Each structure stands twice: as C-alpha cells, then as structure tokens.
Length: 125
Image 1 (spheres, one colour):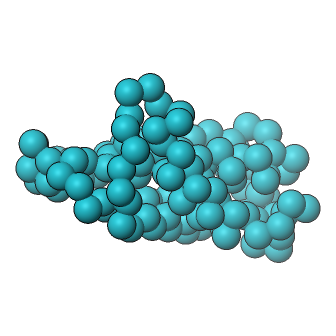
Image 2: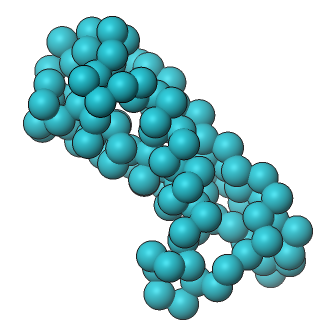
C-alpha cells in the first residue's frame, strides 16, 4: 500500500495515537484469515496449520508492503485466506494512520503462488 504523504512514515515509526501499526496490522491479518468463511460467501472453513503476515516499511515510494502466507492440513487451497489476511492487514494500516494520511491506497492485492489442490503448483509469471 502507498501513502500519499511521505510524512506518514514518521507517524508510522514513532507510533500512531492508536499504537503499534505494524504489530496491529499483522495480528489483524491473521485474525481476518481465520474469519474468511464468514466474510466470503461459499468459502468453507479450513483446518489452517499456518498463517503468517509480514508487514515491512517501504521508503520510496512511501508505504508498507504486506505479504501473507497460509497452509492447511486439507487437500484444498488456502489462497482466499491468504488474500483476506493481506487485505485486512492493509485496512488496519489505513484505520490506524488515517488521521495522518486520509488518502492512502491499497494497491496490487494478488496471489503470488499456490501449491496443492487440483491446480497443483501455480506461480505468478
């Protein structure tokens, strides 16, 4: 995601009035992934065995980069859980920094790779 105001980086680093933005975004992403079946019609609950959300600061252009990963014990894909995690983490960053930068944008939410399931291993070209 991108900040419209570079000064938002300073607010991110020194603490938002709402607290630690990166930690909150990571936790929100994990929680969001666990609630995917409640948010997206026809997504069924999965036995998740791994969820990870990495949130890193980018200097230029100013913003944060969010990458999530998920695994499950079942024989189905968990891409919707991983995409939900990244999106909820992004929304949390916006919520926590909106007073500093009301014009932040979420960009390029996309699947990078997937393994298992009927389609096998798939990697973004």
